[in-house]
Image 1 (cartoon, rainbow, N blue to C red):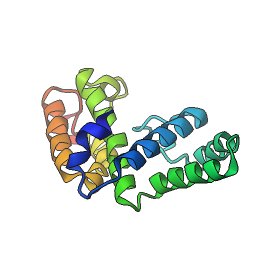
Image 2 (cartoon, helix red, strand yellow):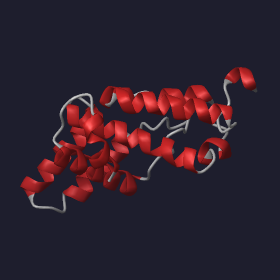
Image 3 (tube, one colour):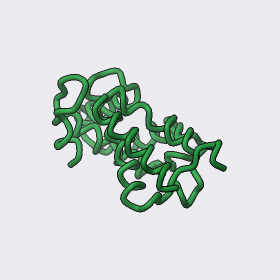
Image 4 (spheres, rainbow, N blue to C red):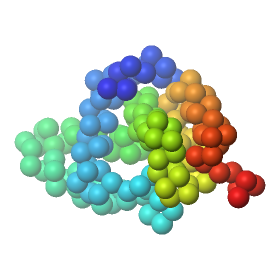
Length: 155
């Protein structure tokens, strides 16, 4: 998994097992609640209440202690208040960058996602890893040069 490979680039030391749990739990909840397109401007990737209901439903099937642990890990990811959550959120936002770059613009091109939106949605990468954010900025700038993303003044 990408988080294992890149953990050394976290801004702070992290418990990588907790980061992996966090990412898996986060993705499981998103799958159940209906993952919102990161660059959507209507829902604005803010469907926390639907995700909360999904988390409670899914983890409610588990023994109480395990359910409480998983809900707490999900909530920690959502608030982003710990080193593990900041790094996990960085990984969650970095992955779509890599996908779009490897697919010659992918959903950026398909949905005509502007530069400012890409930057706004991915800037939180820096909170978990300055190193990965610096690399992300390079990828985004390169994507502008290749025409995958358009700056407002280019349209």
